[in-house]
Length: 128
Image (cartoon, rainbow, N blue to C red; front, side, top):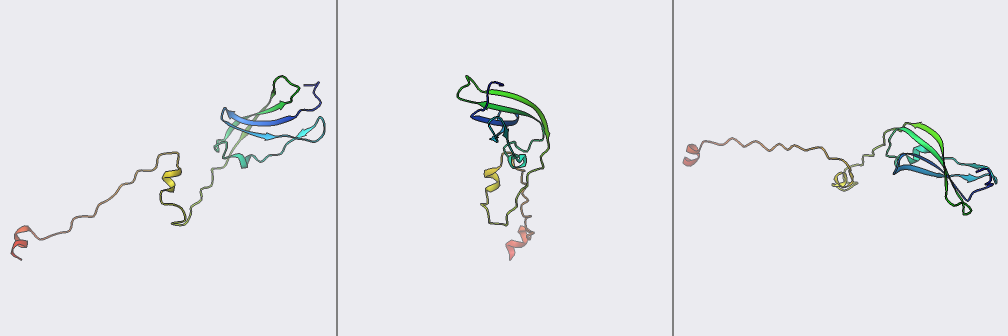
């Protein structure tokens, strides 16, 4: 890396495992200096709000390189707040919205039927 003065592509990757990772582009300050700013809370949805230890890596790429370079910078412990669930007023969303958008099993609904009405015995009802 010491022979590289600048690279065309520089990214910072934060991830736990394959498929659960987020990339942030690093901006060039000068020929040999890069910086990046990020708000991990804005990417919490992409990380499925999973708190825990995440690996931090630097990814470098350039047309003059045979293959890209990946440097492990260490690990970071991240704790996310639970996602905020919006509750909309009745009829502001479709009635089947919950069943159409959920990824988990819905709670089972139990129905109670109306009790039978009291009626006169058959013998009485025949005479009236």
